[in-house]
Length: 84
Image 1 (cartoon, rainbow, N blue to C red):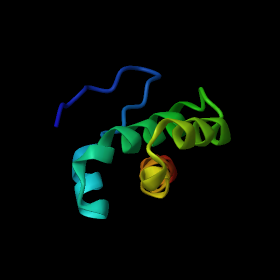
Image 2 (image 1 turned 135 degrees about the vertical axis):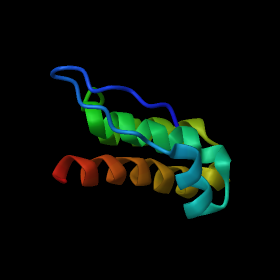
Image 3 (image 1 turned 120 degrees about the vertical axis):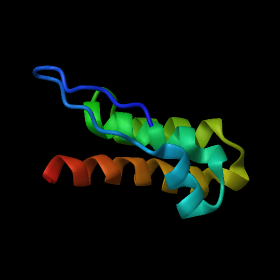
């Protein structure tokens, strides 16, 4: 994993997205959605519900639940790191 020195005023949270995706779902293909969830939670730059709606529209129907769970997994990682 890439190590980044903390910059003044900037918090860095490592996100092992591929490992998390494989551990949770047995598939590395949703690592990008895990990372998306982490970025949305960490920055609040996008509305969570709007991003979820975009995910639903952008992925094959059979994978909607998997992708939404991956998104929430990424968000939960950052939520836990923020409180620690």
